Amino acid sequence: MNASHRREDSERGSAMVLVLMVSLLMSLLGLGLVFATEVEMQLGGVEKVITNNFYAAESGLHASLAAIMVTHDWAGEKFVIVEGASGRGRLQGHRVTTSRVQAVGPPQAPPLSIANEGEDQFHTFSVVLTSVAQRVNWPDTEQTPIYEDGDARENAVTVQAQTSQTGHYFLSPIRSPTSADELYNSDGAVALN
Image 1: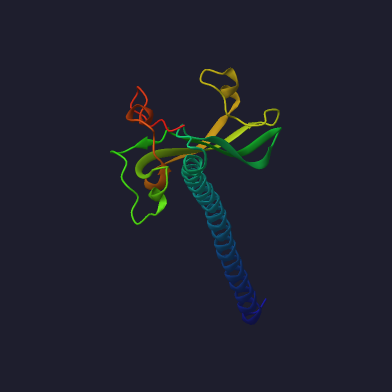
Image 2: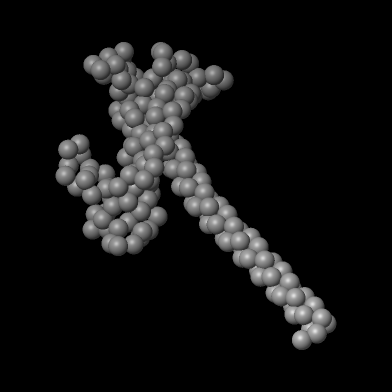
């Protein structure tokens, strides 16, 4: 074997090592990109759950305010927003519960209102309420996962996330109570039913 053959063999061997190192580097880079993409997808899913929970809690605040304005129901709301099946015979959605609406301070005359010209008197109320939204998973045999305290069916509900929002609103015009006793219950809560 002469010197030129040995040089060609060593150059081929060097090229082979270089190709293997570039292939290894490209494989590691590809695996890193796959891992980064997977993490970003998981973070996006978590962000979606947080955002949906936030808006579910906000919808609870608005549902309570609507109940006050339309039916004078100050007791709070409970409802479920069903998203659909999550697999394995379970449903997924948001369970929203709002607190009893509390009046803050005495009722005020509504600003710039002609509502008080007739026989009925109306007022502006400053109110505070809290809405709690839970991302839940429950057996699809149940229509909604809203149970009374101590109900054993609550054990089958899985809470995945929870968000709470408190709001302070001014509601006007609200029909005035006929007496001061009618405004507040014995527990100090507004009672305008």
